[in-house]
Length: 210
Image 1 (tube, rainbow, N blue to C red):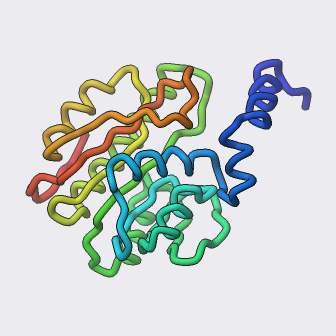
Image 2: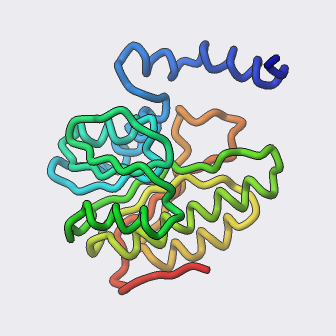
């Protein structure tokens, strides 16, 4: 199959990208590892011994960083992921109840210190559709975090600015003591992605969106 001009341009940018090169030279699975590192350094998110859930983990850059810092990581993705020491991986679609149940079983009743979500849908190229799918995944991640985080636990999620963003931010602000927007240097300038960090979960029993 012949590649489109757009895909060829993306590939050229990708292979010459500073963070892609750095990830390869430093042994990280993805350039996104540096996004998490920057946020961790700024907000001191991860400490040894923490229990962390990584949603949308493949290829494993975020899980890799968290495990290296001494956290116990429970990772989930619809795609397979090469094993990482200190990481319990579950393959499946987070939108399915059975998969969510398997994740909950693997936690064995542990309260979660931090939920990190770098989930993104398969892009259709239709902006309205892609934004709706992205926000749906972010809503599911928020619902999971509120229902499983320990008191005062934290939540980091990737969202894309657009339809539904303001409403999502408003809901998130109601669930955490403070919410901050982060745009790491490793995020491409043209991307509308932003990372929302909820600090200190409010003492609410549960949340259901939808």
